[in-house]
Image (cartoon, rainbow, N blue to C red; front, side, top):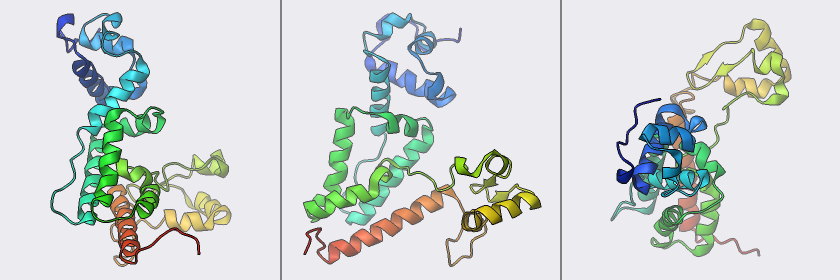
Length: 244
């Protein structure tokens, strides 16, 4: 049994339980987190936790609330684009600190008050700076999960359609920029998926194209700035979704 972070049941509180759960997930991943392992870590019996969290789902919701609280508040006195960009990159920093959080966020069906407060504040960054409700609605759809600091990467993993002989044995590591398939595998990739291969192998982009290769942080900011520039243009033109 691991040494517990807690020493007495009387010291338990909801915040203490959630903080311990976040720390445990940071260390071991969320997959191994259970009420039993958390109780062991705190040095209490599992039933003691249920005085503070009603279920595993309540625990996960509370953990999300804990990390949302780490996201920086909106900047004061700044242009909307600077404020939104800074907030999104702060959320990304938080998710990089808590690698398990993206998986949990994607599975939440309950919007807790903390999550709703963050969403409300995020929408306010647009409305308070003169955006129409109509444009803000569509902006939120366009930004999607970026408001939480993540988006699905283009080359997260090989698709199943490629088949095990190509997708598993001829991987291209776009994050580090190193290619591992041999000549025969490259030839097969080129025959079956020529356009995918061209992009996946473009790890040394020209400075005028992307600049630093397939670095996750760079690609995230590139797409974010592309969106914000487009949104800025729509706002300046008084764009509306009304059909004419």
